[in-house]
Length: 397
Image (cartoon, rainbow, N blue to C red):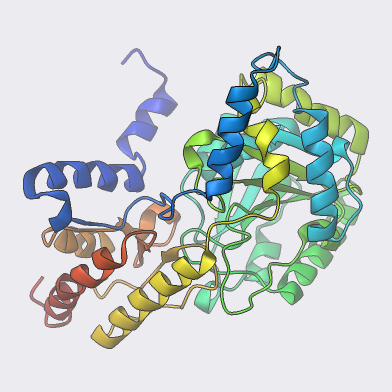
C-alpha cells in the first residue's frame, strides 16, 4: 500500500455512522425513500430560521468591497466582540474578543485546540460513550486517546477518570449534551471534576485542560441546565458551532471560547490563532461570520425535537426497549436486546430501519438512533422496531 498506514487502518474501521448512512442511500434507491427509515446521521431536521436567509440575502445584495477577502485568522473583530459579550452572560465569566477564535465548525475547533495543546504521546481522556471522531482528532496531533467507562445512565465515573489520569495526561474531553446518549452532566458533577483536575494539576505542576464539546448546548429538554465549564475551571476551553442550533452543519461555522483564567493565557491564545492558520483552515467562512452577530440567542424551535424525542421514547418503551431518556441533543442510545449490537442493527436494517452500532462510540451493547427526522419516519418504523425486538427476545435472530 502506498498510502499512510494509519489512514489504511482507519479506512478498515471507518465510521459506522457514515457506513450505515451510505447503506441507507442504497436502500432508498432500491425501495424508495418513503420506505426506508434512516436514523443514522445527525442532520438537523428543521430548516434554519427565516432570519438567517434574510441576513444572507442582505449581505449578498450589499456586496461591500473586500467582503470575500482575508480577515484576521481568529475571525472578524466585530464578530468576536459580539460573541464575547453574549457568551459572558451565557458562561458567567468576563470574556473579550481575544478569548474567541472563529473556526470551521466544532470539529475544526477541536482540532485547533488539540494542535495547540498536545506534545507527542500526550494523553486525552474522554468518558464513554464519546463522539466517534475524538480518537482520530487526538491522533491527528500526536496524542494518545484514552476512554473511561461511565456509570449507569451515562453518569461521569469520577473514580475511574481519576485512575486514568497519568503524568502524560494533557486534557479531559467531555461532550455535554452528549452525542450519542443525550446525557447532560449536572453542575455538581462538573464542580467535582474541576476539583479533581485542580488537584492533579497542582500535583504535576502543570495544567490538565478541560475541553467541552458543546454543539448541542441549546438543545435541552425539561428545564435541564448545561453548567458552565468556563466558570467551574480556569484551564478550560469550549469548542462549539452553530450547526445544530441553527440547522446549518454544511456552513461549517463555529468557535472556541477560552477561559479568561487559562494558564499561560496570552501564549495559549496566540497558539490557537496560529493553529487555526497552519492547519489549513486559515479562517472561518467570512459570510457566516458577518451574519452570526445578528443571530446570537436565536435557535430553531427546540420543542420540535422534544416532540420527536417523546414520540420515539414512548413507542420504544411500550415495545420493551431499555434506555435512558435523553436530557438534550437529538439522539437516543438504547441497550441492544442482543449482546452483539451489530447483529441487532443488521436485523433492523433488514426491515429498512437504519441505526448505528454503539461500538463506534466506544459502547458495545448499545445502538444510536438519531431522531432528527420526520415524525412519520418515527411512527412508520415502530412495527419494524417491534418485530425485530420480539425476535431477538425469543432467540430467533
